[in-house]
Length: 352
Ligand SMILES: Nc1ncnc2c1ncn2[C@@H]1O[C@H](COP(=O)(O)OP(=O)(O)OP(=O)(O)O)[C@@H](O)[C@H]1O
Ligand SMILES: [Mg+2]
Image (cartoon, rainbow, N blue to C red; front, side):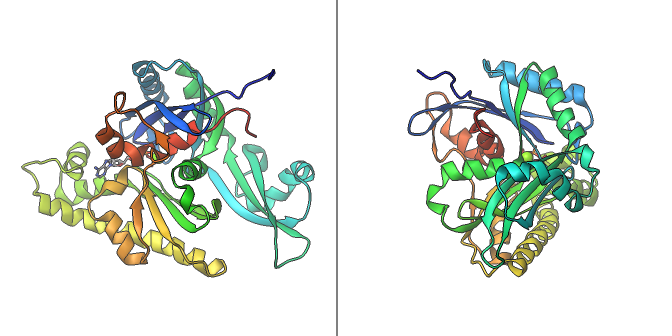
């Protein structure tokens, strides 16, 4: 008889544009989708990954959870952006327990925040082949006040945050389940949300380079607003292909092209930096997620500029989804937006 059972967690992705909830059934040989929903937030509720209007966020989580008839209270959530530092560092070989004791001290020099203001986590990646006696460690530091803000809105909404993950790692987990045949290759996951673009190079299924850049869907909306002289709300409608007598679809596409160009340039810069700082690695593919991956022409523009095939990331690929409970067209359309929340729903509390 087992004395304890791993607890399932609800994946709760609090994005700056929308909140996503995913619940999975953990089966013996895989996963089944149990629950999925998205609720939009007003543009000023979360800015640059910081919760500005917690009452609005609390209410959105509460009503989405109630619409989905969630029964589980325990959630896994994630943070991204400026309050987060992910760095690969080199340290002398030591055991996990030894590093646990030293990490605060070791981390200090790599983190631009006061060490007592951050929560630190790490993962030993393995010994360095080129330097004897040294190993590579992935260092993760998140500002405590951000974690507190996120866990506070979650508990005010009647739920409990058991795990606070990082967007990039949640995407990695979702990718592992959906694309097992890609795990021996070097691929790039790119999630473009409303405020943040996350770039994550995976080598053999492990993150080897990650970067958060403050650019996303809001930049497209703001550019339309500015160039075509419409309100933010109108600009958002135009961006999604809606019509208005203030601007023609061709004009909108013209403006989208400007921001697409900037975004593609940022991707290219990051990938150039990755190539320059790592032993030459051929990148086999780019998997694009986040709502902004639907901007017309974006995937193609990335593919043309960096010369690597781009595919839209479908996080439901490795998960059984009943046609009776979920409209397949809806899941297909919402897939890219759900990527982080699917990754979070894969977490259980028996993990470290
Ligand atoms: N069909 C579409 N075409 C263009 N943009 C879209 C489309 N659908 C959604 N978006 C944009 O995607 C963005 C929302 O994506 P997503 O839900 O991934 O962001 P988020 O997770 O809330 O934000 P972040 O991760 O940056 O905090 C918004 O800017 C929205 O306008
Ligand atoms: Mg997001």
